[in-house]
Image 1: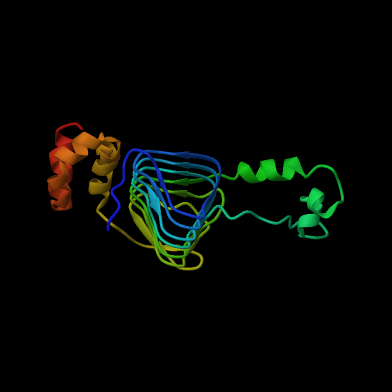
Image 2 (image 1 turned 90 degrees about the vertical axis):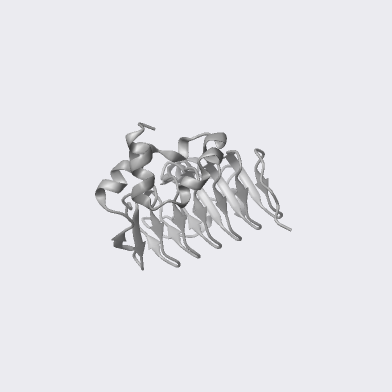
Length: 207
């Protein structure tokens, strides 16, 4: 039986959530870890995803086993091991390395509206994924992705744009993802229109 989503977020079993803000109609798959994450309306994740230090826009489609914002070990120290920054864990100190962890949280990832991150994709810190972009399965994204661009590979590289530049410009102006629930419900059939008919209709209307 399909579970109907409501305004309250749907969080499936065995999830770990730390400093998280979830929007309306959001869904978090089983065995997810969210840390320092803002997850906007209608976005969802599949199973076994980890999101750290990230802001996700509306209507983002995130498949199973996606990793966003993987944190780095210290490459400039004599050792990369935890004992130099998780000192309490090993009994070496009464505090951990707060500066090290603060630097991690500042390496933010931004995922745009109506994006699709394929199965097993990895989005590295300090990366922005533009609105409407697609990241192919198992890709590793190390650089910003332009709106409505499809990227694949390791490291991920653009292979095509979903639409012509004029269409992309109109979609970015329309910002349908900011429409209310009731407006989207009323205009639902328009989302099945050819893209040019959709953009012409709402761009001209000034929405």
